[in-house]
Amino acid sequence: MFRVTRAEEQAVRLTMRMALLDRQVTLGELAAAEELPEPTVAKLLGMLRRDGVVTAVRGRNGGYVLADRPETIAVARVLRAVGAETVFAYPCRDDDRPDCTRTTDCGLRPVWRHLERRVVEVLQRTTLADLLRPEKAARDDLQELWPLPRA
Image (cartoon, rainbow, N blue to C red):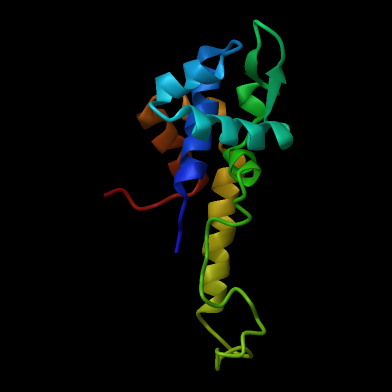
């Protein structure tokens, strides 16, 4: 239902690393830091560059930098850059599904749509800078944004 692909997770990790280092980095440096094969990192950086998340610096001293400040880059933007149109999939997304007998009056569809909007909201409001903070601070912010009962 809620799924993040390996490539999407890796893209978020690469951009987090770039935000943490706060300087120009080489493809090899990113690959080593995140323990990923260089071809994988090259492919992901290409996608991120095409979508304007990172900028490539050419030349002998080239590398990659974030195109904007980490405080302005939403996780949703990084996910979209590597092909995630939606990370929340549910069976009745399409109102015209011929195999669904409840296309006209379904009490479950609003539940799925509400959850999808909430997931998208969290991903749009969470920035790379947010991901660099301690886990407790991130958890507290999410609790404020989207309150859940304390366990």
